[in-house]
Every structure is written in C-alpha cells, then in structure tokens.
Length: 235
Image (cartoon, rainbow, N blue to C red):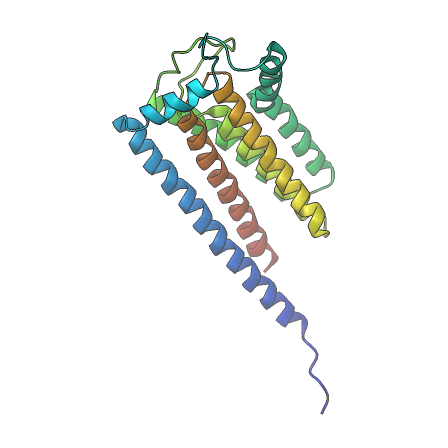
C-alpha cells in the first residue's frame, strides 16, 4: 500500500496551528508581564517598595560619599555611555535605519512592526510617567533628567527596540545558535541599560523593573499583531 504524501493544504494547516500555539503562548507571556507591572505599580503607590528601592540604590553609591556611584571615575563614565544606548535619540536613529532597510527590501509588515513598537512604546511610556508622576531619587547624579521616574523610559524603550530587532534578526536566520545569539544580545543590552539607570542614581530599581515589564509586553503584543495580520493576509 502506497504511503500517502502530505498535501500542501496539510502543510498550511500545520503552519496555522503552529502560529496559533505561538500566539497563545506569546499573549500569555504578555499578559503575565502586564500583571506583574500592575502588582508592582500598586506596591509603589502604597509605598511598600521604599525600603527595597533605597537599599538597592545605596548599594550602588559610595558609602563615604552617597553623591558618587561606587567604582573609579572611568566606571561612571562607562555607565553614562551604556545608558545612552537607551536614549530616545539613539533608539530613534536605530529604528529609522531599520525601518528604511526593511522598506528597501520590501518587508513592509516588519517595517510597520518596528515603527509601531517604537512609536507606540514612546507614547505609552510618556502617558505612564504622567499618570504616576513619581519623583526621581533624591541622590545627586550627573545625568540630566526631564521626566518623572516611574516607569523608566530608558528601560522600557530599550526593551521594546532591542527585543523587536533581536527577534527580527533571529527570524531571518535558520541556525538556532544564531537565533539564540541575537535574542541573548537583545536581552543583554536591555538589562545593561536598565542597570545603568540605577547605577547612575536617576531611577529606582522598581522603575526599571516596571519599564522592562511594560516594554517587553508591548514588544510581544506588537509582534503578535503583525503575525496575526500576516496570517490573515495569506489566507
């Protein structure tokens, strides 16, 4: 008896099933991150994180002179260099370059993904800062700040931008080791930017945690929306 070869329709159905499972898992992950943000925000509003915030913040300061971070002067300068990777200007340049490349290569859906993620992330960050209006830490720092403290905009936007671009680069390469490298690099850059904000004394650790939660959730939701739109368009 001849073996039955899989039809093209079977492959399409398997593809839809696989995309559906990934969509469910991704939405669950985004929901968990948003729930974590909500619980964290509630604790911050009630003042229950003051002891933790203060202890971690002071752990990065010189015991004899809390106005200075721990370590030699070159380490503080390095911290400022790292924190600039999460600045709106740098991330805007990187995002515009990525969108331009994707448009040239006719990857319009992914160009829309980057634009939606970054622009939407900046809007959400601004609205959340206005809503919570948390004062910045009262330690002396050498980095100028212009907005409220919660959540950290650098942490949030770096998570949105680096995770979105890292996922795109991973998707473009079939080698799993390369995929893991790009995702790991995106996570590393996101974490380092967030830590630099606490090290420089411009954010409480809960600001950074909140930024990571919202930024990662928004990046996942944007990716889910684009994948859903792609699947619907291919039917």
